Length: 113
Length: 113
Image 1: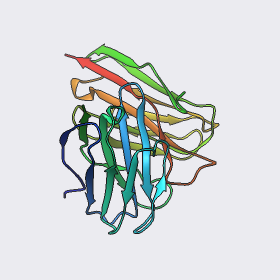
Image 2: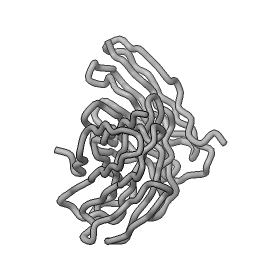
Image 3: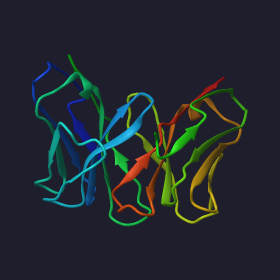
Image 4: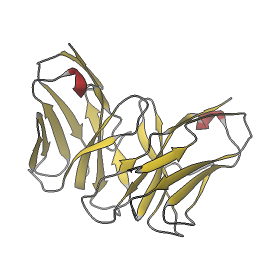
């Protein structure tokens, strides 16, 4: 059971470069999310999707874009990386409905220099 | 300012001792969850509580949702080194849509043999 798979696991970018983080889930979950985790600040929601072809902004969406062309995949793009985007990024998925928790991926550690 | 305030931020105890972690807010939540995260991994769901006053037990872990659904606690009895990790509470405000989970900053628990 793969659950939620994130690629890559580590990446170093130069300021201004772009990249895409891939998230794939095999649980047929409707909802998918991208979070960033920074020391002392907890997990902050970047963007989320409630179904194929739909996306919505979370708490900290600036500088990021997302796409959900297929139900099982949720892509996070950084258009022009900045040092402030250095963080650990987590993808999660969940079933629709009250009471269902998240299944998280193992994270991507991104450093922007 | 975090919507969900966790205390303490850090807790170091000896094996066999008991501990309690708190999660507090001024907002009412329709559901609240607890996760445990180990280094280099994503958070793993421990429990979901949805009813004010609800108490759930998971082996040596006891979770309680406040009567007013504004707070929660996690109590570990006879802690073991395997309980070491970052404990996160997360909830959906009663006024938000299902997809918008808010996370606390976490409590780092270290249990030494």
